[in-house]
Image 1 (cartoon, rainbow, N blue to C red):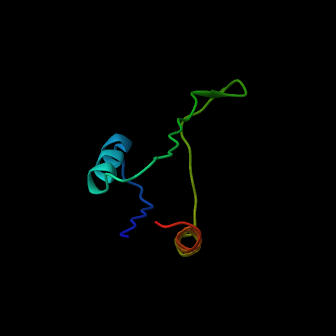
Image 2: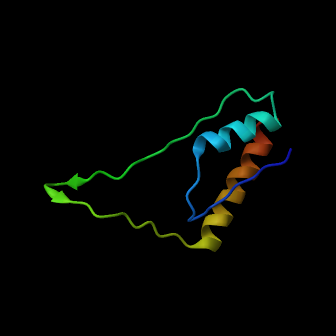
Length: 76
């Protein structure tokens, strides 16, 4: 199976991604996703943005481990 995982800073449309996944494999049973939004206020103070930090090498290694484990557990 061809598996694609991306960590990116650029904006994307989740609906477009799900449609592309479904078009490539009509046999998929489910898609689970989470889309979060930053609140405009927190603890009475205005929120102006959110910063998410990750270490690329560690992130990619952790994602690869998840893929390997999933491939071992299920027929992907």
